[in-house]
Length: 324
Image 1 (cartoon, rainbow, N blue to C red):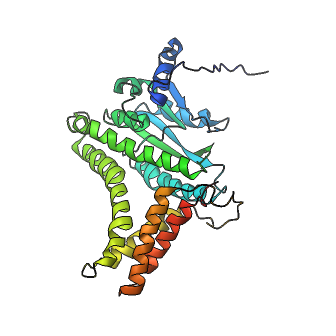
Image 2: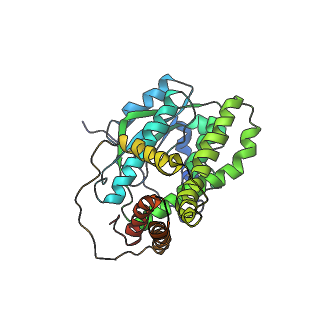
Image 3: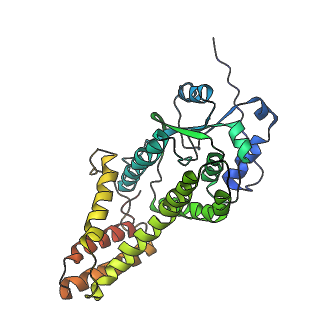
């Protein structure tokens, strides 16, 4: 006996609000009032047939849950070096941030896809808002501030694709970094004045989730390791401790690699030589290379070894050898 599935494909006649606008448009349909849960998948995601059977029961048996988030599995991770590095970074994100937050019943962000929402919780929080490009984080923060809980299911994996072109990857990372910063600016007072959660949770959301992880880490990583540290070779009186130049980046890299315990090296075909020149990466790589050469010939430290590797990473990215 065949199973009848009610699937309807719709398109809007405008792009107002982008993804958030499309989600708001879909929630206006009358049949949504008959539903209790909302499942979201981006266009490149391929859920397994038993996805709903493995996620919906969590919401049925725990009325305090608002979100069930599944893990992403990447079908094109071995396409090129760029996708390989993304897999390592995102696997660490799911293991260290999502899973740990779920285990402690602490707040963690919705990944925007491969998740099941309780519609009642969404409506209580005001639904989708298109004030930023991170409508997923926006909704998760507002629902979390109402006292709802989230759960991350590590063994439920949904196949997806990673951007294999460097420019697409850079655009994605720009959106992922600027969106939360803009949302933090708009929600700070709303979080402070919230009366539904304890002060420690408000402190966690403001300081750890937003300020530290979404703003400080991005600015510190770039300006310290790409601007200040190379510039220090021209100022011999400035002494930067080894823990800042060696230990911290090494430990961070090892922790990210542990989450994906497969070899980084693999063979892949390349496109035409110098087919994609990324000017910003070339300029940054050239700047760091000049600093490394100055330290090599005139300095009295071994910082040039680190700077040469960093310059190589930027220059390789600049000529498009990390993507397809």
